Image 1 (cartoon, one colour):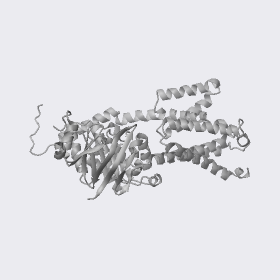
Image 2 (cartoon, helix red, strand yellow):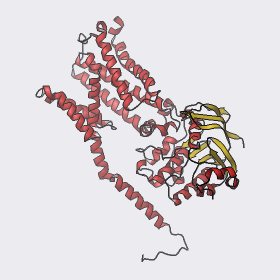
Image 3 (tube, helix red, strand yellow):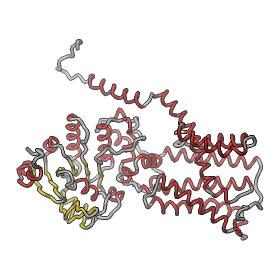
Image 4 (cartoon, chains in turn purple, green):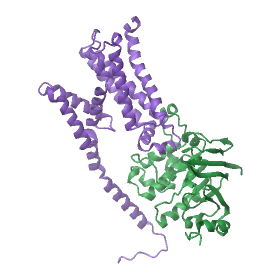
Length: 266
Length: 248
């Protein structure tokens, strides 16, 4: 196993293999017009398969115990590096969603049938974002492994995936800063509370998820953004009323020459 | 004027029912054709077949000398066929401007799209389309704040933006007021000045207003074809519609 001891090769494979698998699984699901809830179920099943795979091939993966015998980086410099990568990915995601391809992706989210009949190969666009996400997750996972110095089947399983979904839901879906905020809040709370409430922590996490899904549907950032937008521009109802009023004004401004002038009395 | 669209012996069977029965149909370049027929005649099914939503049991569809019979919807769109759905169908959370921008004619492949910026020319085109469909001063509004009639017009604008050779309009005036219907019919006539249009319509006022060549479908076959007055005088057409009073 000497080639795997080379650090550059390990980094390259850590990024390339997950992206490749995302491409493969993306083709399998999206090309067959599977998406939404069904796609989510399939990705959970895939992570279960990975987990079983890790437990089964003990010789290579350490089985139940995981891999611990490697040198990890637990210094401040590496922490700064992680932060730099996070900022880089944040900017990448922001540029991507605000470009023209971002608009196309949003249009597919809103109405994939219309997008397909507008000439977009919806499956290819889905595979593309799936691969971009997988690449980012791969980088995060590689840095996570290098930081904690212990990697086991639990890190590849569905529980960890669901935890990431909770972070996103708490922070705010549909925003880029939301998942960052959610992760800091939830992991921070875990850090401070798990010592006191160790047995109840998972219960609290579950309760938090249900609360967010039922009450704060757009997460913390989404709710704040909605509130701000309402303050700035008014609610949807106010916007439509304003548009109606403008259309009405337009009709009354139209005063062709020679037409009888409107009387002041109605 | 050559033949743009040709449907040959098209048959569609769904769960044992024959929807289209050896249908032959063709359209010339720059034609405005109205498609009539009672409910279940196969009008929407024909449009779904041409755009690749459903696959036919047998028969062929030729468009601009290409056989497009079993192509996927996005490929059929790219060779120049745009479709208007019966219910307004757009991207709800995007702004009116972005709705038209996404529909602009362009290379739709993912990696071609990555580096693309919006040129000044594109921007002018979007604004002129927004003027055309009278939504220019609502350009920033999310599409789901529009009224029903405005949505229908926005979708027409999106179709114009894609610059197709053939527009398939499936009852674009559904759910509109009489005034809205009249304006929409005018808009369609203006679109038809430099596009080929196939219009499915139930409302006889609009058919009269547009009145060019009319094709009547019945039980998956062409029952009559010709000018509106010929078709209305046709005994078989009268028999099919009898009791409905639509042609009286």
